Length: 217
Image (tube, rainbow, N blue to C red; front, side):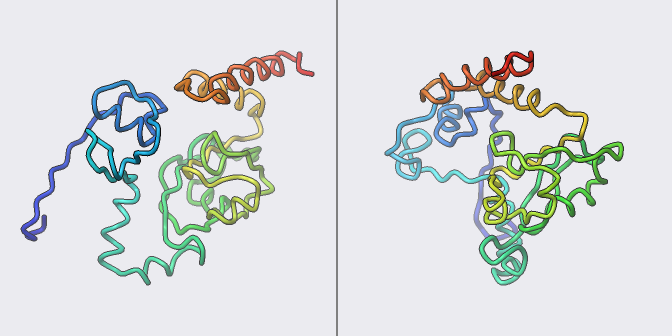
């Protein structure tokens, strides 16, 4: 590695495709060639992980942040972002935006600023609602355009930063229909191990279908 005398073997492994394999212990099962299922803990991966060996599991974004921090120092990194959420991160903008994609920015940036980078809402339409951290986080609206997108700011607004997957929806979108499609996805991808997920999403799908059909109570 850069003439340091150290070697590192990198293996790129194709994922099995199931949503549950994003959970760290299910990911280990998938890497071992089995169906991805969450494991009981303890033991934790740091004690008994991949092939029962001590395993460190890091997000690619975390690993990618290390070289510039090492090169420029902790003070440089902490000069960005907010006091409690320092540094930079990746925001994934998708949906009704002109230029969807990955945007690297300091923690604490607002959706208004990110939308300016992304060319605004597609077709010049009005923003109706959006997710700050993926489809499993409480929805925000145009009233939250200036909420700081750091962990404290989003929590104060009543949601979660989560994966920082910002899904943008314009005024042509039905909120009930969008949420209904998410419920169908989670119902399909449930590993079935816990009752709230296994049973809860089945019932939520039925409820949202009734709402869509005008039969809600």
